[in-house]
Image (cartoon, rainbow, N blue to C red; front, side, top):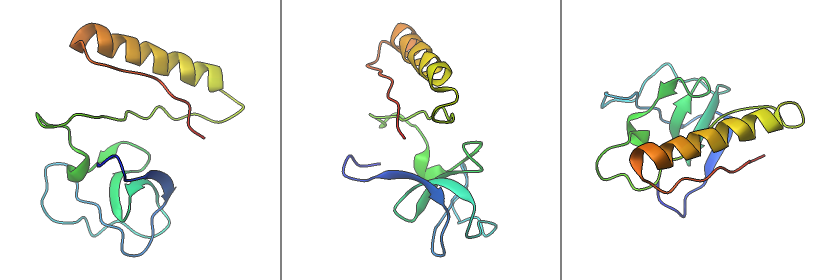
Length: 105
């Protein structure tokens, strides 16, 4: 994903494309109305985050990664931030990378 592109959590729309991780052809089962993370019309994940896409794959050329930890605003904000901060800390410790946690609504 390029920095100028916007990642959205939204319902899928006609014309959206999802290529499952490890595949080369679009998955024809994606229907409008499914909750997805998408950049433009390219679906990064579907069914929240357990169906990953090929265009969202991390490889040796990847420089930036977003790892969503989903929650419900006003319900479990503190738990979500604790999980995010813990993950960022572990990424720094294990991989020696830059990592930060952000709350997005």
